[in-house]
Length: 140
Image 1 (cartoon, helix red, strand yellow):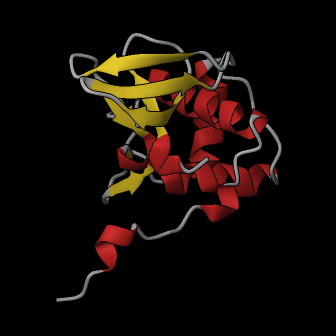
Image 2 (cartoon, rainbow, N blue to C red):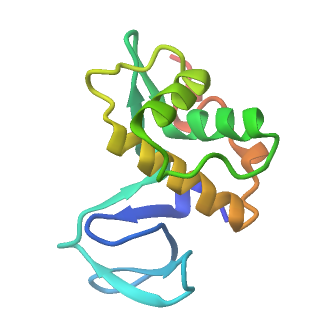
């Protein structure tokens, strides 16, 4: 399982792994219940590899944030996404100290922690996450 194959589908809980291409879209498998179903072009999907978190300087890719949580937690699950907003914000500040608190809402932090815990429960290899995206490695 690679991060580039993990997606979130707007309006559906959890995360999904892309399993195959189909005529009108893709076939995904839920990481929650292992059910497979087609996702059409009309669904709003987001690849985890393409999501970034706002900071005061720049946007930090979600993959870097997930890897930071993994290193902080030493591979274990992190705090529950159901904690209070203060607890969530305080924890997230430890992982990404300069995140933009005006543009990163508590609901965003909840989602990131929920996704991390789901991936950790599926024994996702966070050590395979690279700091730089392969596409950015091109030199002029």
